[in-house]
Image 1 (tube, rainbow, N blue to C red):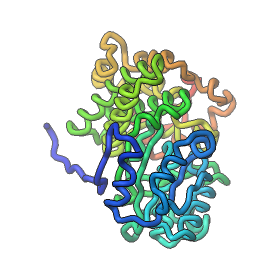
Image 2: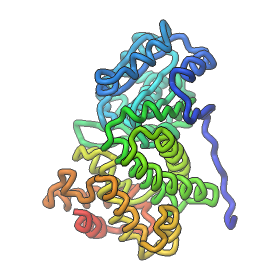
Image 3: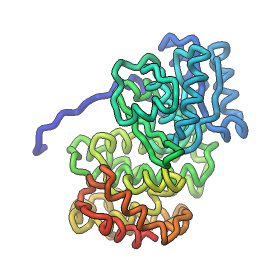
Image 4: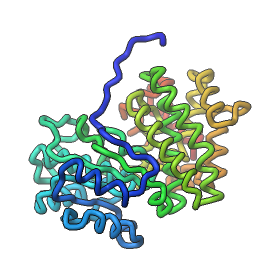
Length: 380
């Protein structure tokens, strides 16, 4: 260890790996003393699977509402509707079942309830500010994708009117408990499970190359990357392999809990714009941006990238090619054109991205829209 640093632990009390929701959720709710549980989930899980019915029956009379109106990218109008619904039923605990949009959305619900926010305009005005008081309500997260939102204290939501993603953060917004149930993961559509895994790969790669990385974070990021590289390939050929899914969930935990502390770079920053303004799914934005950002960054991080290649199991390849190979093996999109981005949109994306603070934190300095445009043309 060559530098001094401080590790700031978050108030996340329990993380259950490989345990079923049926055997774990009721006990967690009892442990937390909750009596009125508000469940938020996606429309797909609610209407096309028995998972939410199972959760509601597990909670019994303590389940006071099931809400399915938080849309992808945690659109803030749906988040405010969830806030109103949770307030009306006097919820004392939130349970998020789904991907990052649901879990992040509930973090913002926590923020709004704790701060007494009642309108969308009030919520937007408080974006990027910290909570002024401790959270009055907490969340149990039951993730069904590999985005890693369940381990961070930050929630991102999209202002649909402007197409801008806004952030909300405070230590107590991190879910109080997590339940990683690999059987629930098997209900997730293949494209979503695998692309969210590449989002996790993005966390590992950009976190490892970030300016604030420490030896503590490095270990988790490299191990997470190694687990992703093997487990998702197994899932692709054997979707019913729950051990592979659990390995991926473990990787997601390692990836995001360390990435959130070390920082990121241009792949994430450009991805926020692709998602908020152009509707590109976060997993797909990582698929189409990460290899090209790694190539662009190689000028400044070539030696570090060799460790990424080794973790992926391809020490003979450069990291960008190793990631691109994994994306291709999973049958995921590899170019911006594959996710609906038009060539004539690249200049506007570059202009916006060059001003984004996450892009500006990139390990190889990005000083102009021309730098971003060079990456975007390579990715298109």
